[in-house]
Length: 66
Image 1 (cartoon, helix red, strand yellow):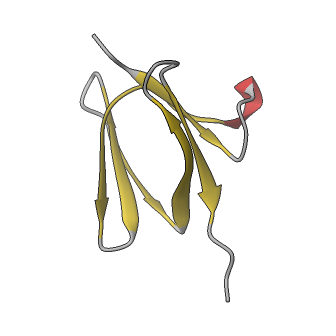
Image 2 (spheres, rainbow, N blue to C red):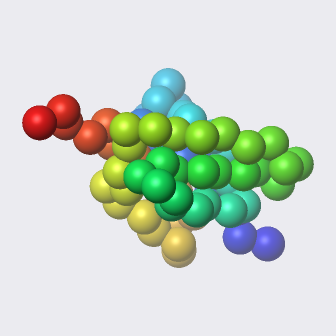
């Protein structure tokens, strides 16, 4: 089973947004994430900075307001 940890800004245990993320969808500028238990979160104002399927992580970063 391939699950990932989502971090905010950098890979750091204090920056975990979600562990065991099973599904990520981008819809209407929002990142929708769901973990293995079906718990969902809607993350607005973020973009994917780094995604590594082999190491099972994704780093999300707040979008700068222009």
